[in-house]
Length: 252
Image 1 (cartoon, rainbow, N blue to C red):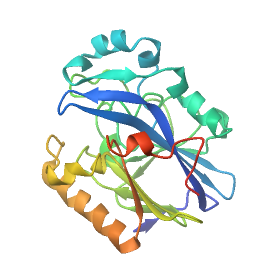
Image 2 (image 1 turned 90 degrees about the vertical axis):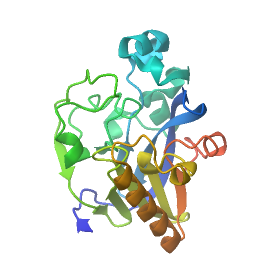
Image 3 (image 1 turned 30 degrees about the vertical axis):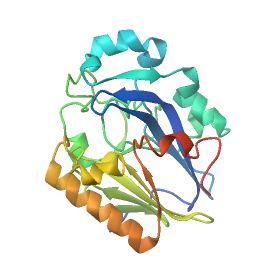
Image 4 (image 1 turned 135 degrees about the horizontal axis):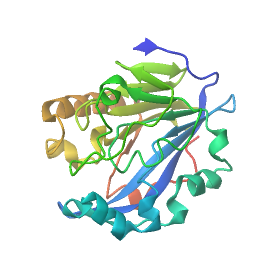
């Protein structure tokens, strides 16, 4: 574990941000599109992912046609209440309160406002940033890398006491997951898409960018969770999402 102190404080709260609902044709299954907000005892706020591009809130059907996303799935619910600004506002925050952004990976449902926080550094896996363009989705990569200060990591990295960023390639070349130690909740692991749902483990991570790597890191995360007695929050769990605690409620 590399130590790279990027924050002054320790995490004191973790909030799940609700960026809407999507139906994946395979299954089919209905998934929540989520990001997260980590706050520290030094008044810092770390934003993890920003959901779909804003054009999907303006007109999801037109955006789906433009991107050719209809072959994969469809937006079920995505309103202004699911925007980055609205989700931050639930926590009493605005864009200028964000200290650090983290891009868990660069698929279309995670990078929508990656360029929307000028002056805020973006933490990202070096393998992901090395791509000619963000992944977006397999139907095309229309988005260029936004101008920003990128902090690239090549291994598991502790960015503050009690806040580890875990490099878990498999779902994507630079997939990240997160391990937190919170004052009341204790150990919490946010898998992001390193494990999108519990059943993905038994399904062998079919469809991943690199299936053997996804299997390896999925097992690693679950072992870590068992060892730490951690609460696990998956990236896109149909079973977990309806009852999952979301902003303005937090894990403290």
